[in-house]
Image (cartoon, rainbow over all chains, first blue to last red; front, side, top):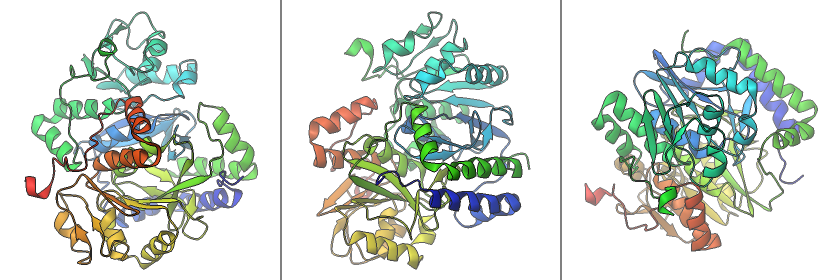
Length: 242
Length: 242
């Protein structure tokens, strides 16, 4: 049990802490914010990130880094039943919403990861994505997240890309998608799909450029000391480059 | 309240879910794993990531992506009081340990972020870092995490680097550190410090190379479709390059 230290004591401590939270949720939420430099001022729009067990870490947190300080958008997380989602790398992220109480998101993002192998067959997940997609401004994916969108029929007749290491499996989820084997990311209407894992960070900055212009996108990258690959055709991992 | 949907209902749901967890914690932990492709087999060593409110997202999750599948290391999180830590970008991560019940980590990592402005004055944090550092194999930081290590005296007489956008503040925390203005990351003995935010991802891969060799490091990068900057002297954000 040495490595399995998510013990009863820790869980009880967390549950107790969160129960206290519940009693004064607004105050505690504000208190957390006042305890750091985190600015959580009201923002009119939401970026909803769909989590599930076995999501790939950087698929989520690369975009979160680049989208986290946009002036009009707050990032929120959603899981089927709320609670927490464990990444493929073993860390747990809190889901703010469940599929039942989630609001409409202006930007929807679904990551990839080993968990997508199960999610492509999860009809509750596919229904939620279709429901959200009816009113999103942008529907996006990173890595094999595109396989789940594809299975939901959301990418039918659209150009899209996905993880290049998992290309055969991911693209097998739909014959109605115009899969692009050579693309760091693809914009097609409101649909934005990226290649594997770290490609999501480049895609996220491309969406920042689309929303706020090149200067804000470059500034966002610079603040993160990130060398942005700003060219979607520059795909070092393209299928046809192998 | 539109943007503040961390409501009583959600929190209670989470607390209830985690209380159920507590009753059958081992089974539920295993169940989570069996519900996805997450492999959580026993591993002999721990990478302990120190979290606090206002940590910078990519400082943590870039390295987590690159360290998450190492054969000998499990990644765990620790906060002063356990519970959750909210990043500067607004997402909440569960802390597996508190400073009281944390085991000795073989690799210690502290990220940067706005929260470090408070943590450099947090004597409980500084004591915890000094205590861990006595027996780590590697003590590492990303971004302004180095300012906290420096304030704890851990980097005295060592070469180190930190965030280049926050250089003046970060380096002001200690005159006893040999601060390196031109370095993507710095190895000095067991101390490994990186420049800002995304530099941590490159540093993390450099540590993978140190532990498992160049081929495993390149393979790890390739699986994440990540173009690794493997040269610590290649620092596009260096102070002397500005």
